[in-house]
Amino acid sequence: MQLLYVDESGGDSPGTNDKFFVLAGVSVAERVPFHLSKQVDEIQTAFFPTVTAPIEFRASAIWNKNGEPWNSMDRPKRNSCMKSLYKLIGGDSRVTLFGIVFQKPDYPNASPIARTCEEMAGRFDAHLVGLELASENKEKQRGLMIFDQSRHEKTVQALMTQYRTTGASFGKVKHLAEVPLFTDSKITRMLQVADFVAYAIYRRYESSDAQFLDIIMPRFAESGGKLHGLLHLNVNHRECTCQPCYSRRTDTV
Image (cartoon, rainbow, N blue to C red; front, side, top):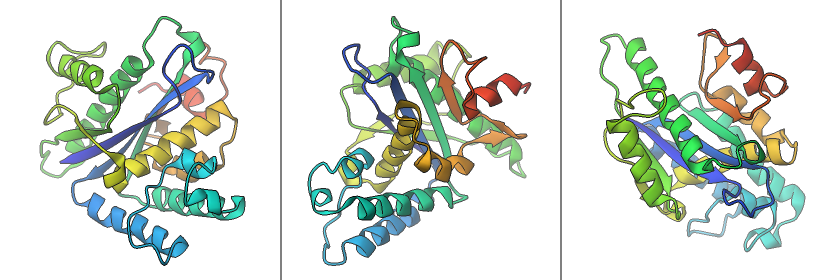
């Protein structure tokens, strides 16, 4: 069983000022979350040795000094804390990342959550097919998507049901074991990891700051040298110079 932890960054409503909405996913085998969560706990201990209760790691809160304990930390220490977690993600070969960047002004009549969910489901399903083909006995792979609780829950449930039954634009999603689950990121480190991935992508596109995305870029799904795990949805992808768009132009797979 492969688990895909999914979180978002950026506003998806028409009235928000940001240009981008990001949906990010962290795919791991079912045994990995226990070990990876312990490593995140160790990062907390390194920065907060006297705190025994879990601290929620939310990238935007740390970056923007939003609430305690981040209000009491200076910028260098907060940056160091964030980079420790990004290096953990970027250095773990058990992790496969996905990210869908939706450029909102280019699609004024489209739903950011619907477009990004469709792409995420399709790419996760293709990843499961790839794992199945790569296994020695072609063992059937199943996946489960786990989202942070949000106002999108009913929308996402309906979309995923549609993708599994009547299908999406690319066909049916066939490898999901169940409808998506929703839980509170405060109680699961893996959703906090997904939040960090979403924020790294968001900062790269919204603020032209790639310092965090560069650290985790090796973990995005790829095949044959082509980047399949990170997609920038925009109408000018043939001219866009970002790495996902360049890979998209040269992808003949």
